[in-house]
Image (cartoon, rainbow, N blue to C red; front, side):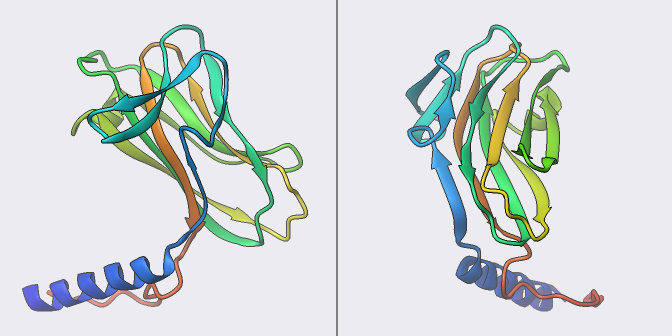
Length: 172
């Protein structure tokens, strides 16, 4: 049973690595941002991040206003928060938005999303249907309650080519 599970896992991860290339990837230097955000080195991520400071509720990250072909997608928002937050509180949200079609997907996040540590990847799965829009953007909204570090936003096709599809099969 363990060998069959391992073989399945290896095949899925190999196929995903071969087919899961990003359609768009935005790091701290690439992202459209408000004036209150700063680019800085974050030792926990080992990379440059965008620091979104405490303060007022706002939308500090937006854009890039791109065209996406018809299909299904996954947007990954890679975030860290300041250490030591213990109160269960909403910290913000992320969304995929088009002025032409509105919100295609959104997700609120709070301290509960960071119980395993200060970092988390927030996923939004969304579909573009025959779109002529050229204004898709990936936004981060903050409540202003905590310092948030955004490492990058990655948009890729979903389901990735090569990922097994069909009826699940019991292996154990």
